[in-house]
Image 1 (cartoon, rainbow, N blue to C red):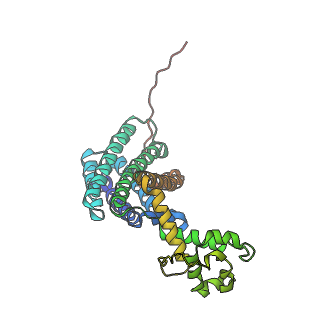
Image 2: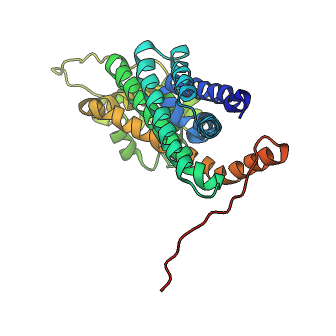
Image 3: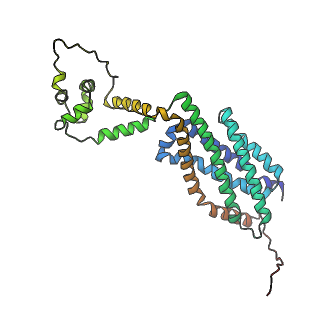
Length: 321
């Protein structure tokens, strides 16, 4: 086979693996928002999964046609340099080592299969190594995501994305269809006098929920409006300026920070599990189309004369009783 045919899939594979690292970088930059993006992160992870599956496919095709360790090691080394174009130095070293080891293992695995088969069935021969390479590369990227998440939590702490808190607050506010006048006791328990005064200063928020300042006056306990002569006047710290939504967001953020503080060490593991689970789902869906793609590829190779198949008769020995 000519060198052109042996190397034709090498540049395609290198472009695809570089694209995978680029989209991986976007997920790292998005951090938590990657899980709450378009369609729950499916779009972002699909952009990562598609070139990753195609990279595994083209690498196995490259090994099938070259079957030369010199070419395989050279291409694996070049592919391992891709992370250095997008990621930090420390993370790039980890990802590069993982990519090189993964590609090397798949080379020897596929070589063993290609030297021992008796009937060339491309789907049966290549599908296993392709899926195995997907797993190795995904494990490498997951470990890198864990290291990145752990570093960010150590330096910046952990904060729930504002988009998720906004969604929760909006859902909570929109679902409150209670009659405030009929349930003053419950509201009096839920709101402090400071929050009531803040609401009175924002009539536009009250109008959204069909309230007026007189309704809020009814929520203030009567004993809080009068003071005894000997009772000291307590100066209260004003709440941050803003509407009710901002007040609720501040309180929710504070509550979440206090709740998660003892468990910060476990959050990177949870995020890495979420990354692996969502990416695995995308890869599984994409590999459903792997068999027809492989069959179509070799069908086109045969029809265009890129590859030729020979049939041979072999003598076999059978026992006769």
